[in-house]
Amino acid sequence: MAGSLAIGGSADAPSILGDLTLRRGTFDLFSQRLEFQRGTLTFDGGSRIDPALDLAAETTAGDVEVTVTVGGTVSQPTVTLASSPELPQDEIAARLLFGTDVGSLSAFQAVGLAQSLGQLTGLGGGGVGVLDEIRRSVGLDRLEVTGGEGEDAGTTVSGGRYVSEGVYVGIEQGLGDQSSSVQVEIELTPNIAVESEVGTGSQSSVGVRIEWDY
Image 1 (cartoon, rainbow, N blue to C red):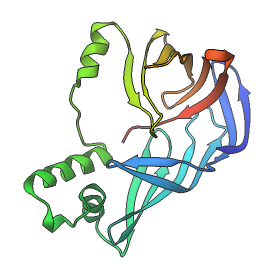
Image 2: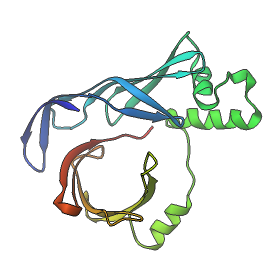
Image 3: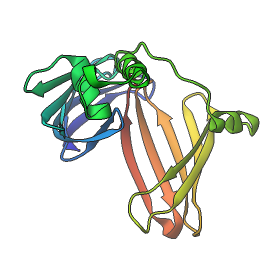
């Protein structure tokens, strides 16, 4: 992202004014990866850091062009599906998930469609996975296993815990090599955090993470 932000206030009550514009990025929805066509986050400088969202991503599902628009704010985002030719939300989701129309879905696929739409609107639930059980048993707040993209990408294990309210410290280790990094994350709000990372070879980075659940 690129843009200009003016940060003021105090450490206890920061304020941010300005805009961030997305240069490139992807959005994962219903197991489909969409390319962002535009994206802007607008900070109003208020006492509550809750930027307005204007994001749009596009993909092709069969013979349908699908656009996913994210609006609202970081704390209360809205996700809208649109298509060309114009179709109802459930029809668009069916094409993204299964590559076919609602009328051609099996009973099992129909249940999956309902669950996915429920998650999109904030009504869906989730289960407890194996990683969650391991994470709790070893006393960690986070534990993730991820695989990279490409033939040479390996598996990475990361984990850590909150050392105080809003301050997270973790470590990431690549399997099969010696690469590792230490991460520190400081939450400014429930949706916005400052992240820093120091890896092998003294490589370091600092960034701002903005996320929401839907």
